[in-house]
Length: 301
Length: 152
Ligand SMILES: [Zn+2]
Image (cartoon, rainbow over all chains, first blue to last red; front, side):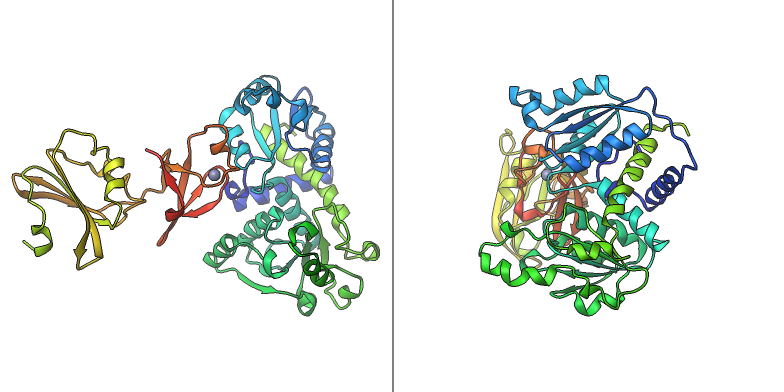
């Protein structure tokens, strides 16, 4: 792998390799050395969590970072092209991590510069490091990625994390349940992809009845702003909130994942149950990002 | 000779592009860059076809359209067949292969796509053959071919 731009480019073999590497880094079975290397963290669109996670990952590997956040601190305002900004930065940096509001910006970056590029989110398109850390979290909690029953709940239309995850898991024979309000359903193109791979999935309005079947429930936030009429939001919002009561009777290995930040879609009482895994999931993100950087920079260990 | 062909004079040397998707002949002529040449060209639009109901047809004197050139019209008229004529005789006949990758010619309909912002040349992959759907290599959005615009 030279870049990580889209889960579409990542093979099953790559996924398993990165998971194995993340696991070795976490267990301290290997010691990766990034000393003397510099990562440019270019957040044209600010994202505090992803930024911190990458910064932590680089520093734990012994590398250094320099950062740019938001369009105000960049040359963008002066009218410099993205291509020029990237070229200049690639003269200093050994690897570029980039988030941008424009879809396809990361692929363009990878084609523009010689150093490896990691896509930390491009508009509504891809966020592959999130998908990889989700996969790592699933592997860690279930001991496998194969043959799992996975519920996805919330805003499935606009949540790019659920799109990438559904696509990435489709090579591992999953069964999906998608629970969302009518107008926030999983997009047709994702469902077409799943159909063409003969993946079983079912769309529900209420997740309750299938809870005892699930190995993983992936929760995303439903934003009030997505509803034209506030009453419509009030009508559905409680159906997509995870409470302790909802978790009665779930499987022993069941875990709740969430890309964070959460607002009210998982009640805080769930945090104390053995099913809550979202904070651990965020921590897994650091190990996975360490693994991705190690792989792309071909670092010694 | 069959009746539908009698409507247009036969040519001595050149290419007949038959079975063009109805209404697409002018666009095909544009793509193949034949409309501003000096050659004699006959264009038929909305001709009756037993196979297709309606079809368009183009005859170009003294120019042999290559297989590669022909493939560039695959997206707007995948059903077209090309007949190369030499001295009133058919010497070659071929259909069109839909390429797996299309460079430059499609404009991405996504206004938030980098190709519409940084002036990047577009690249689309064929996502589905029937009906034809293409996916932008950059923003990864998928579109029906009828929903995209072309630039040549
Ligand atoms: Zn695009």
